[in-house]
Image 1 (tube, rainbow, N blue to C red):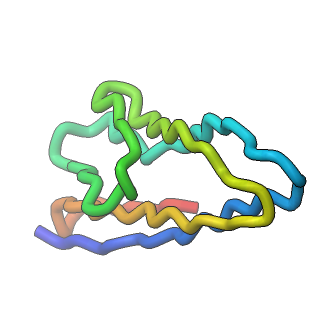
Image 2 (tube, rainbow, N blue to C red; image 1 turned 180 degrees about the horizontal axis):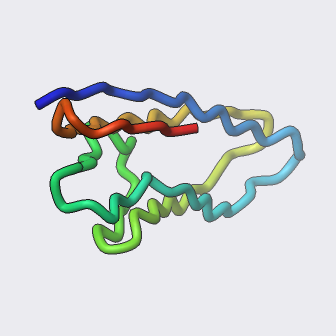
Length: 86
């Protein structure tokens, strides 16, 4: 079995003079092959739908503030499989 880990840092910044409510959506890859598994290792308190891989963050950003979210996942696959994620 082989594996690799991918990490994304998402920076959100509110440049407005009032707070904003924000819903951010992202998605983990979803495998159609049962031998390939994808698991989230860090979601920065995001909620994941395990069937679709969609991650949802509901945030409130104060004026002139920023926040950083971290999205990290691990892909495990048999050595015989060729996996390309881009």
